[in-house]
Image (cartoon, rainbow, N blue to C red; front, top):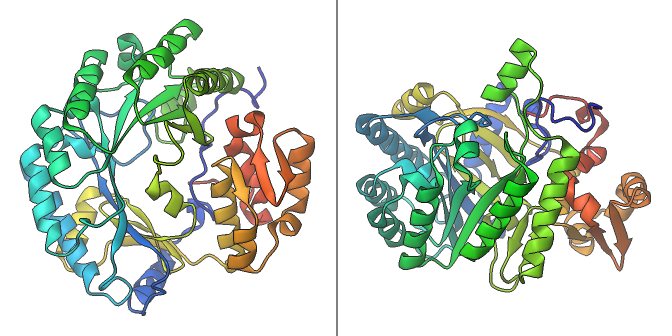
Length: 434
């Protein structure tokens, strides 16, 4: 099997530009400098809060997570989040600005108890309000939910819940190191429906270790029965630092994950089935009941260069033209903030051209890109700027260019991340992504 089709170790999913590996410790001052400046208030602002705790570590997870932490550790962490927000709130770049969106990611934000969630909301509300935010998204692992906790999520203002289902087969969930099993999925989903949120998303992963055609089709049907507002389909990859990746690199083990053509076929079959049931494509891997009512405000803003204030260990942000990431070791993060210092670990100020590339490639992941907004924002015509990759990819059948719009074909959508490096500046095409 060729290396082009095998799922090998390395990052595939593109979520930013320039690559994270190019953000440097010595550039931290760039973030600190911009904090002190009056912002462009026409740029929307949101907040990403990272909750690093999990019941257990999935074998395909590459995030900084802490497993089986006690209540004292969680309380210390909530205290530290509160202190970090207090450090940020009076800085000129942030003071008096309204949050348009909030995203609680992880880890497992729903690892926190109902009482801890209320404490988090109460503490943060002294510095920041999301009462008028268009969207507050909260990631949940099914086995961590209870009816009381779901009611608390509603109470603290969550509007969009994302449930990490991944698969409905218990043997596959166990093999891949997931903490939950299928009965917990159905129970959690019932509670979410009972309490009611404007939007509920469920995640599925095509190509988990042990997946088969028959089981994948069952998963797709089961997801349809649940009738969520949003469906997200990821294709399993093997970034560095996962359990599976270490087994491959250290023991010379064969990749246990289905090859790329199989995963793309599974994702495509799922898309076809969801479309036939009335769902609409909102990006290369997301479907919604209605494009008119089901917006993913966090994604839309991330892809269009809005300010995202990063809060929490290893959290990524973008503020007034500066990319940055917080420290990624839990104790180091806590100590730094408690000492009254900003926990930023590395930063980078992209050039105007790099910002153009970033927004272009991220919006390509939505499957269609309107060209005129780029001309208006950057004073550059992307059809000229990116003429070569667009021509190459049109000839290869990945996209079409017509009526001032670039549209990806299904073939292009299913492997959009593999297309994006062709738009990178040359010096970034071969570097490690993370």
